[in-house]
Amino acid sequence: MMRDVVNSRYLHTAAVSGSSSVGNSLSSAEGSSLPLSDDVSRGGYTKVAGKIKLPRAGSASPMDTEDVEDESIGKDNMKALKMDHVVKDQRSRKEISSSKKIAKKLKNRNHTNLRRKILHASFGLAFGTLNYFVPRKFFLSGMTVLSLGTLMMELLRYKKHFGWMNDVLHATLGSSLRKHEMEGKFTGSLYFFLGVTLTAAIYPRTCATLGIFQLALADPSASYFGRKTKHVYWSRIENGLGGFGRNKGILGFLGGAIFCFPFNYQLLKSAKFPAPPTTSSLLAASLALGLAGAFADLAVPTPALTLPKRILGRRVPPFHVDDNFVVPIFSGYAATKIFERLGWNANTIFLSRFLWL
Image (cartoon, rainbow, N blue to C red; front, side):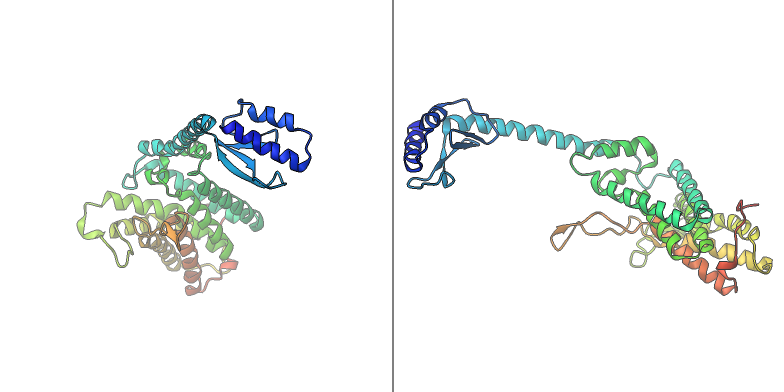
């Protein structure tokens, strides 16, 4: 029945259009060996997923078509399409599950993770040193490229065909990663690089360097002391004030500030000033800088404030407020105000060539 319809329609089309390929059209229409999934055009008729597109009756144009079901071939076609869809779905699931498998091997944010803290401090000290000694335009250019590249990676690594990025990330950083960083959230590296870049861009070089050094030391030390004293109930900040300091502790804050103090003091003591500063002013500036860095870390709540998954019906990336971003920017700002208060001009203070010597 189906083939009779094909033949009669194409006899009509050939008669109207004066085509000389009736024989070819009929022989192609009667042929049964058509591919299962791709659109196929044989002898003027087209077959798409179990349907045959035929010229509409009474029309002189072969482009004016209508769909006619072809049950005999439609079943095979549908089977092939379903199998193709299943294979693609399995590949997609495998890619998505790779991050989940990695997440099972990682610790959550409540774990001390000394390796992560050492890596954090090392990168912070390295970036602070580079900021001070590398020409500004080169450092900012490099940090901008690094930040944008990391952002691109974060936006892609949970999508189909980019699951390999999670494998590379895990192979590179290993247990320094946290569980939530493989469960849909961005890594702290993105905020670290963005924080360093903005700090270097908006503050005088000396103040920016001191701000980045507070990120290197105050952040991990405050976290370490906070976890070590979490059993001291009176020091804990439960819900905080509007989220301020949520799930953090006063002792962690003080531990971070004190840890930074000797480093800041030695750094400023070895710096070159237009006029020699007093010891008391050096001590005050060193302690104030440590308090600023630890305070910025304290202010960021745990878990972090995150953007809603959808805004105006559109899915948005999982950006959140991160201490790696807040600490250097706030500390750099604090450095400018501390210097002003003490009557120091940030542009005339030069840190030692070897920072400590």
